[in-house]
Length: 244
Picture 1 (cartoon, rainbow, N blue to C red):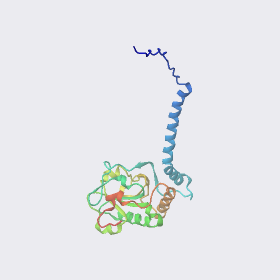
Picture 2 (cartoon, helix red, strand yellow):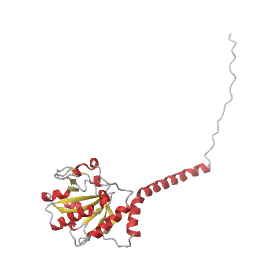
Picture 3 (cartoon, rainbow, N blue to C red):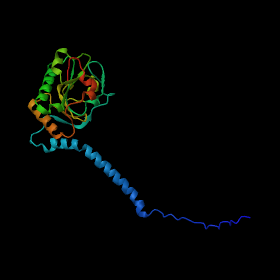
Picture 4 (cartoon, one colour):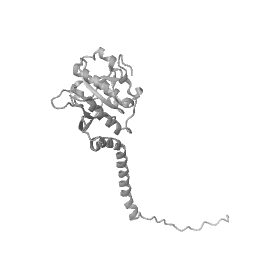
């Protein structure tokens, strides 16, 4: 016989777990509210440079002089490629969003480029050059509407211009002229986030346009970048006869 004795019966142990305290239950919605507040603060921090620049330009007005350009209210985002099909002069598709990160001074005209178009392209070039060391923050853009290609005699003077083909109706759904004016009568200013925010009058004064552009450049030094990266823009800079 074995000398082993059977183990004594072990008592049954019961574990008692504490119920959640009322204070812990109340912490859940508090954490949710705190998370939402942090998200709102982050969104405000991201938008603050834009808000600050617009506030500085349109409310504070350090020079005390009225703006020459008309503020677009509300500002209008650049459409996606499906709504604004852009192509370069070789017919390659260009995503409108690739134009972001710099200020854009935009001319809209068909390829025949009448005297008004020539005047705007000349003003566009001169205004950029007068910005001096800040000119790298402003891109010149010509949106060529209609079926006729841009006049070849103009191309040598457009070495620093993004020349893009676009359907007129698609451009007109984004940029709007002043009442009674043609779409091709204005210079349009688009901010680095791709938002159309200003339209200069058809009978603009170059000195006042320059002053307005300098104001927005001063107010936006923290949220745009000089010198567009050709690797990002791609086809925008590859137009025949043009060298960026």
